[in-house]
Length: 365
Image (tube, rainbow, N blue to C red; front, side, top):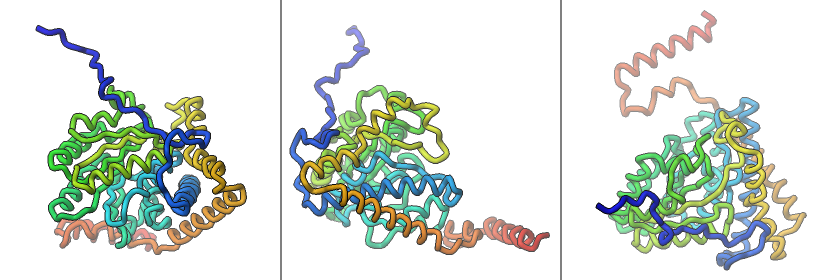
């Protein structure tokens, strides 16, 4: 009997991390062919997103919103990938894609509603093909496969892109979605933001494989590993994957290696499980500073434009906060509505009991 090979050599299936924009703002490859205005707009939205994220954390600390999931450090992964999508494509996001969603056209004030617990958070503007933010880990991958399969059956050229974290790759839904997508060759892009941590569990405890991208091999689809803090590399990778799907060649798995600079959510304390040394290393790789250095080298940016961008970002975010907080508070009794087409007897009874309790509390009895 042949001896079992405990240490499998996968060198022939290596997935190097693709990088174009170095940390100092220089190029190690060819920059994507982006119009200057689009590139500057992408940078400005990275600034707006960082400002939004910092403001949202402060709002939670002030008790003005509920639990919130920060995304600072992941702006390039999100905006760089969303920039390769068309408005006719569909997006199935998790709870940490607010930067990409706002760049895509999702109003910033609506991005606050989920953490506020407002029922309107589940509604998406009609002009956007975006599913509501998914809290359940990895469920949105299956939704994307269903949408992509429908597009294929209908003969549409639309692509379904879904976003998830490294922790999602431990869920059965991840494997089921990739397997189904590959078998039926649906036009889907699976975009994993590997930010190194699933709450307090490091990626090396999620898997023993060297990369997430190599998981594509098991499902017969292309896998790409990219520097998630490099806007150019992310855009190029996503553009290739989208065109691959749109041309009828099937799905792609992208692993964007990045880092969340903040906590998993505002209910988390990352100092309990992350070292300060590693944190500082990743702060030096910040995607915003990296892109700014490139723009300055190219003569496209200066201190005046930088100051103007942050000031306008502050104004946009403050306006979003005002709009979100100006919405009327919903009737708490609506929690019993929109669950069934017609409320069953037990919900009618619960709704009536809730109304009686509210009346007693308001009446002081």
